[in-house]
Length: 204
Image 1 (cartoon, helix red, strand yellow):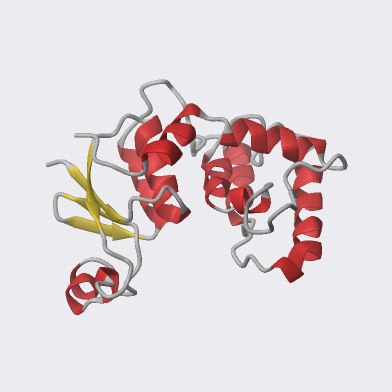
Image 2: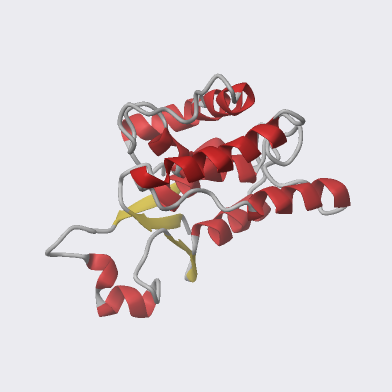
């Protein structure tokens, strides 16, 4: 059976990250569009909440009747089940305790999820912390690109020029060159560019 991904077609939020992982790992899936806007609000119907997601959110993965929700859980499931054809390892091997600990540490850093212009000062402090991390390692969990980096792709575009804060670009600040370097590499991934241009769609 082909995997089914229930979400909106927009390449944002947790749905975008899950679709990005499937794209990077060449995992075929069927896109099942969920009507978010009124009057449908399909995700809030009794049928959807009783069969797919009890809280009425997306994304939801259906793997031959095995229903899984929450983007981080879906991401870990996919990465465990489908090895990357390119050898890209987004989760370090459990046998490498230090790499795993660094990865879990990076995954535990709460990404910015409440975008209010009045909180720019708070974002600056958070990004200063990221700068300290990224001045010592290439990526958040060390020198290898991991899922911890990938999950930031859903929020940080809103902090760049033309994003939620308008003409404020927090990701490209001369006092945080390593944040800028990290973000440019992350946002420059071909799979992300394709996903943003095409939206989420079936690959089978």
